[in-house]
Amino acid sequence: MRSHSDALHHNGGQAGPAWDGVHEGADVRRYSAASFMAALVLLSVFSTLFLVVDEVGLVVRAAPPASGSFATPIRINDNTLFDQSLPVVVGLPQKNFLVAWQDQRSGTEDLYVSVSRDNGTTFGPNVRVNDVTGPSRQIEPAVAVSENGTVLLAWQDNRRGTFDYDIFFAQSYDGGVTFTRNLKVDDSNNTTSWQERPSIAVTDTGTIYVVWTDDRTGFLRERGAFSTDGGATFSPSKEISSSNVTSGQTGGVVVASGNRIYAAFVDNITGRPHPYICVSTNGGLSFNAPTRLDNTGESGALQRGVSIAPVPGGGIAAAWEDCRNGNWDIYGSVAGKDGRIRISDFRVDDDTTNAFQRGPCIAADEIGNLYVTWEDERDLIGEIRFSHTEPGSSEFVESLEVSVHGDNDLQRRASVIVTDPGQVFVVWQDDSAGTYDIYFASGYFPDLFGLRLVKGWNLVSIYLVDSGYMASTLGLMYGDVVVGWNSTTAAYDQAYYVGISPPSSDFAIMENFGYWIYAGVNESLKLHGTVPTLTQQREIFVPMSGGWAVVGFETIHATMHASDIPDKFDVPGAVKAVGYYDPLTGTSATYYTGYPSTDFKLVPGLAYWCWCGDSGLLTYDP
Image (cartoon, rainbow, N blue to C red; front, top):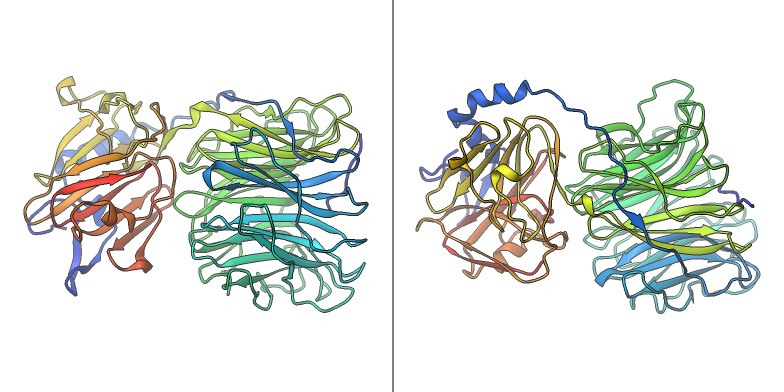
């Protein structure tokens, strides 16, 4: 066994959400996102019900065992004589994957990648990324993929001098077959300064941001630089947080969600290292003040090794190593798009032996399930373990081994991504053959299709086809309410109170429709049905003068934007605006047709208010 060091008004007399204010030109009006919910609040039929459901109380449900398993691992590297280590995995278009790692086959470390084009069944040739050979070292790879499929790699590189590590960058326009000439990202010219352990992200508009740990000031600080020209050049670097320029910072990681950039790192500004998150809304030009992710206060607890992932609706989920219990465990939090904590300080691992858990990597799918892998020593040797939790929950299921290890195997440095809900892919380094190799395993957890509901009103849709749900069979709790909007009559003409309404009040949950659900407590509903693959259609009827429709989309992929809805409606110019409210994250948005700056990504499971000037047919591919 060996180890490697890792230092909601009225609208023309119609009920429903409406324009708030006066015309701003022919079509564009100011819109109140809060108006979505206020129409229901004004319905007195619900007023007494609120008091009933509020008394139900919080129901604590025990976390179930993991419902799925991992397939037999496959080795990715095609050289077995030397060490391959520190792998990272990223998804490519059409459910392909790319894995990058540092590789010693040449006698020193180089950067290699391999691509799977069959959903992880096999991997292709190993391709070297660095364009120098010889004694220099290319290590600590980081990878991201732009919306158009360009692969972006950053790494730590000492080609300019043995004691001068810099951050280099390359990209691939052909899905990992070839890479561009290597480009130095950092702007340090000190021949003995170290820039190390980069992380890279790219926004929806194509801004590339790289963060790294930098010692140029005499203190370890997290610095970053951005590119707005597709990686041809990078800006001068700047510290992520300059609130205390002498505190030590390490472990910087960065992700993008829409056009926001989130940077996390560990900072000892209090005298002890704790994890923090910063948000940039201007492409990395500046970040807001850091928000601390843990809530251990000024106890003796230390944290390190933070990992973050974007979550639906904006914001991030984080996981880190934490010693509050006297040994290293895995804890996490969820922050909203503004960086403020929404779900605080949950325990991820389930170890009871006081063994160490290290190196967490966290991922989230398009409906909000969270997945975490880590290195675990409960069996007296490093093994890669995995757990997951449902949207809005902080209870993780019983952990399981990704790959059963041998008596002397050491598994380290896991990296995890998800494609569809419940479809998990993990890579790690494993020395079962005597040298470190890169292994890949796919896992499937079928119980993770669900709807996230928070206490209060939720505007949701069922994103699976052939689900056959009635309002009574959604799995809601006693006193919960399901309400349907009739766009033809512009009225709420369907309402079912779980456990209270007679059977005659029950109604079918229709495909491509949205519904209001009032939940008495935070809930997560299990969904059944089929992942949509065929073209979907929804006929929308509104009054002659136009009106509101509540639209849902049967798709598990967050690839559509609000701007796609008008284009997919067969009456050109009929859809004037699209709006939503997500109570889980407290976010709302309105897209005005023809105004790109108001556009937003559609989230599976949410529903959207659409103002339609005429009836028509909405057609889309999932």
